Length: 278
Image 1 (cartoon, rainbow, N blue to C red):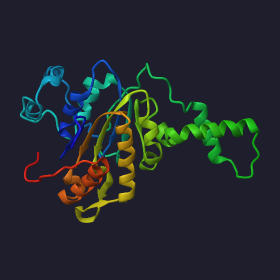
Image 2: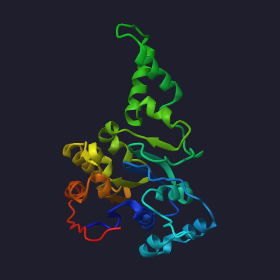
Image 3: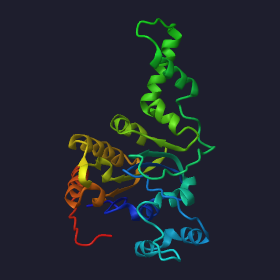
Image 4: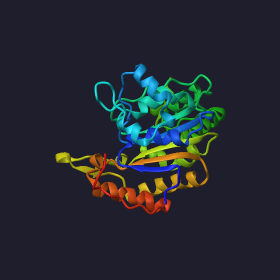
């Protein structure tokens, strides 16, 4: 059985509505998005949007999904809901973590002035760059060796120099798949509770002739879900949304197979119907 703060959907269009059912506007949270896409396509921000989002917390899921612009285009879609979340609710988020395939337009997230600098300081980055260039037989002063060791220890939890430089000056942290398993428990065990937003299409890439190829082993995916469940059971996750996205997973069979890895790990019993989906 799903807990009230766990939501599974065919695509992420409803995710924003789900989050707002679980968040306390008097608190701040952290945000973790694992998805093939950024889901932040730029939108026209106007009075129509502002009025809708000022009252969004009290509307039903039906009214949320049925909301259209004056030009009859749906206001919220699977590829723009994060753009709206950043615009209208972003001040409640301290850390933004994105694990994607760099597909789509990334959200513009300003670095909050109230948040301290990353523990990986500029001098750490210089030390790590120097470490990459030194010869193996080169002798260094003990003080520099210790400084490099400390910088490496901080880097283990913060990502590569390249990923840090790529988002320098931004409130967004882009992470690679190789970082996730070793660091997920560390990241989620922080002062704030987390919004965790998962799309199963993250584990799939395009193959030949429009085929969708599963590129992660079941072991990797199960390990990720196991760490996620550990954080959820410990109370570190405020709300968890999971999208199947069959059109990007290669069809319903593969999407359902990936979803079963999630539900089995979380001990959930879920019967999926594919007769009607939106």
